[in-house]
Image (cartoon, rainbow, N blue to C red; front, side, top):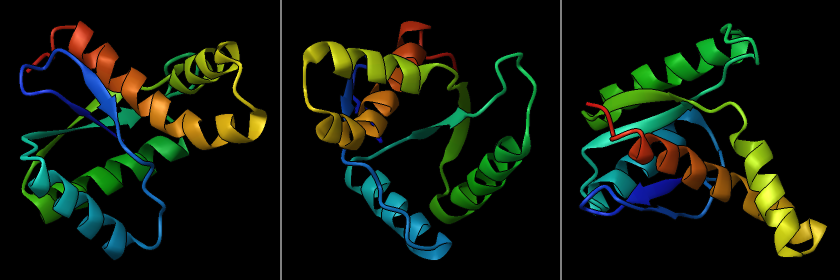
Length: 124
C-alpha cells in the first residue's frame, strides 16, 4: 500500500496489508483511509501482458466494489503490469538480501503504481 502527499506529487510506501479475511481486510483499509483522510483509492488492475483481463481482474473488480461499499470512497483502477518486476529490479540493484527483497517488493510495487498514476497527472 502507498499514500500520496496532499499535493499529489509523491508516493510514500506503507506496510503491506497481511490479508486475513474479506471483512477484516476491508475494515483495515477503511480505518487506514479514514486516518489519512483518503479521498480516492487507487487499485492496481492485474492485466495479462497483452492487455486482456483474466480471472484475477474479476476478483480485483469484485473486491473494489466491496471496498467502495464499505468505505464510501471511490476506487480507481490503474494498470499494474510490470510494477512488481520494476520493484524487484530496483531492490536487486540496491544490493539488499533476497529475504529482505521478498518482504519489500509489494510495498515498493504499490509505491511505483501510485507514482505512475501521479506522474500521469492523477487523472480524475
